[in-house]
Image (cartoon, rainbow, N blue to C red; front, side, top):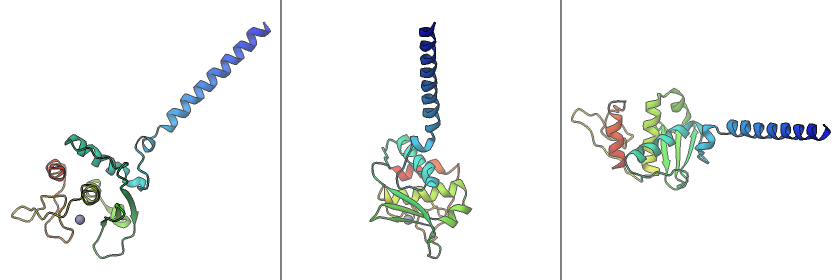
Length: 163
Ligand SMILES: [Zn+2]
């Protein structure tokens, strides 16, 4: 009887520990831990991830973790500049006020543009339609053409980025 009790209590303890481990493991598995980008502001993670995914869809292996591209949100004190790729430090810098007021589509456009510089090493492209609509994500920042980046134009413009 005594032995049986001990055995039962040990089993219960073991089951408890296993249960706790599973619970702990499940809780820990947040998206942040599946896709960690060291030195990248958390608010930029989903767009870094999308950039990798869009590259992969087009046969380009993009590994932003390995390449150590950094990313931060900060106040950019320069007129009309909302994003920068610092080529020396491979750091994408986005103006935090611009970020706060922007749509998901604008956020994606600016991140893809800066990663175009910082990761793909692309220069600007003033490719535009005859009526002045930008055809490239790598359009110059000085307003040479008008952005028309949305669910209809997105795929074609991302194709242009990765080819
Ligand atoms: Zn640029």
